[in-house]
Image (cartoon, rainbow, N blue to C red; front, side):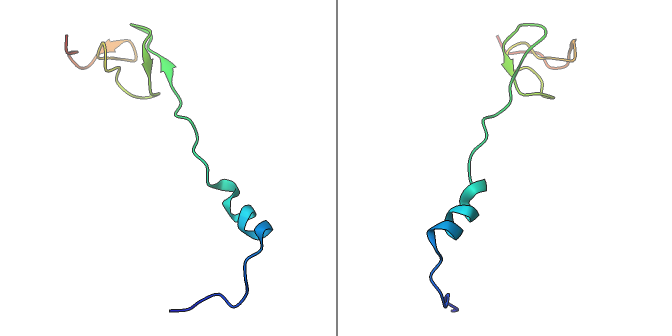
Length: 59
């Protein structure tokens, strides 16, 4: 298996890792019940999406 000929410096290693981070998930408030929901998803607590009931919510 191939191995690197030269050692990778701290600077090059850290520059490569500069994009390796987690981004917090975006959430919005449901227009119907004001609970936190992912954008473009049906609300799990009330079953509404874009002001219409699309799923019967579990009680």
